[in-house]
Amino acid sequence: MHGTSTRVEKIYIHLHKQKPFLGWNSLEKLFIVVFLCFALRPLVLYYYDSKKLRKYPNQNILSGHPIIRAAPNILSFRDVKAIKDIYGFGSPCQKHEMYKLQNGEGHMHILNVIDREDHNRKRRMLSHAFSTKNLESWEFKITDIVEKLVAQFDRRAHSLTWKNGPSQPNNSMVDVRYWFNLFTVDTIADIALSERLGMLESGSDVVKVGGPGEEDSAHRFIEDMHEAARVKSKIIGTLDWYYVFKHVSSFLSSRCRSQWYCGRNVSQIVSHLAGKRLRRHENDMGELKAETSILLDAGSKTTAIALTHLVYYLLKNPDCFVKLRKEVSGAIAGDKVAPYAKVRCLPYLKACIEKSLPCNTSRWSHIMGEFIPGNVGVSVPAYVAHRDPDLFPEPEAFLPERWFKNENIGKMRDAFIPFSASGRACIGRNITMIEQQILVATLVHRYDFSLPSPNWTLHNEEAFNLWPVELPVKIWKRDLET
Image (cartoon, rainbow, N blue to C red; front, side, top):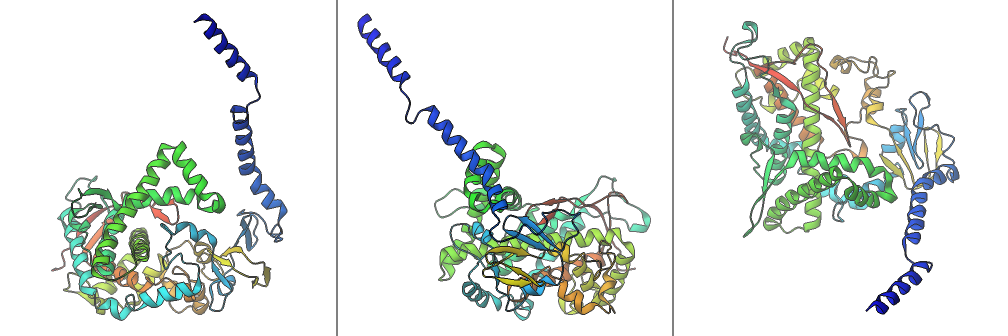
């Protein structure tokens, strides 16, 4: 037995002295190579500069240059003259390759599809459903959901009028940002999918998912959607390394792993809702899921953001609030919910809504007189375009009046791109305007609001969009009979 043990020890020592082929030394070398690839590749791309982009300054607010190199292969234009060259009809620019990373299970939707022919096909398929005339026929659905939101606000409103002071403790606040998001999800689900989610009635964003013979599972749609966007937005710009970072972040960080899991929850909700429509209509499941996901995402999130910012800026500018109420109350006196026919043409309401609201060069093009090589990401951020002081004096001020009797109104309209422009313009523009006009007119006419304090400031979280974190307000129900 002792001899056998000795021989085993000698064999172990002999093998241990051999130069390992795939031992720790090789793994260490492999790790070093991978690390160097991650560390050096951006530098190589930057300095190699085969497309001569280094002449543009890097992302720096102090540069003062109208063209910024935001990444090795991406340029950002701050001059509104570039809008027509990039987004106009006949432009050679197409969607950036980044959008391929948002295709879910391999199917592109109308927002991220890159191929022009496929985009035109999808747009033809959806354009009638989102036309103003067709959406007006669904006004009764919007009215019904506005009534549900009004019922929730009535329960939480102070019973006395504004002049008599609050009837509840000072800490009785309502986060209207959250309620606006419940409203927009319920609305788009009912109009686009004929699905009653009942979020406003329950006061919760929980959606139960299940099928025949399956036990239902509950997921928080809004919170899960935000969590998924948070983690995606951190690595979406890496392009070639996106899927590597996705798996690495999930492995190394429990927080990221939880966020990716939330993304799967959203996918389950989308599959559940799309599956119901699939049983009613003959459609391709993959495409149906893709279009359902963008309807629920963009159709709810952006409108909720706009509503939150609008109410916030109206409360920070009480003169504008009073002026808007005067216009609205004169049009809808006696109506619990504003009829669209009575508010659709109110100029100050539309101006208030408008005040509160990247592409890729597939081949070479000229933008602002600059020669831009093919396959370079180019964009004009709406945030920057809408703050051009030459077109929008005092750009940070809430001035709905700027849209009236302005000699630059034509140029202002050309530079106003919250819904993008031309053939790529957002197909949901009509529905968000109808929702906002009806809801804002109803709320301004029916309630008084106040912020937690005169100096309270709205904070935003940045992911793919700037999301308001919360908007806590006190609500007073007005006595409309006096």
